Length: 243
Image 1 (cartoon, rainbow, N blue to C red):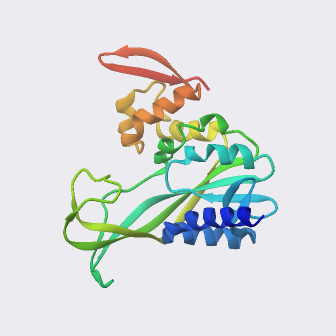
Image 2: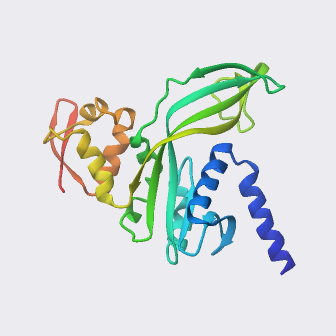
Image 3: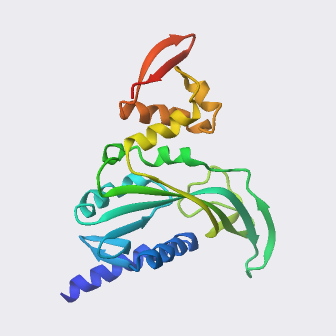
């Protein structure tokens, strides 16, 4: 029993050690909302927020990796994946003493269609009674610390060295929220963007809010059996909705 307690404690510590302020703030928000507890071991998993009826998991990337947790825990609880989408990001640069050097708005703006990149491994789970995604549209701050010289990150993920290291992400505001619970919800997001077109190609999607996510959206729609290819014109493949 002592070993089991220590193992659970280690899992919780690992779960929270690299937690961003954004993750923590959203976890506290949903814990207050459902009067739940945070970082609780249940069913062999550590849950961000849980009460007797619902589980909230805060996930900022790669929702698909939560598949085992969704499959197991949805047997006894409603499980919501809370996925924040940063509509506005402010970049804050600080020095080694924590003093703000500069602030600027990032040109990068996310929208609902970035969700398709996160769900490629769980498309078949949409429609399950006890599973859904809450997409939060937020404003956030990214905190970076200035370095004296250009550096690589510890995980070697940078293509080029930069004169800063990332420190934190913070929630600035919650603008809106939508729920995605079914395959039709995913399909209708695309239909609403191209409502006037009976047929469409990759270029058509890139000219909407879907933009750089167009290829992945088409891939997902194929996996959902939502579209069929109708023709090839030049180098473009055209599709129409089946549903």
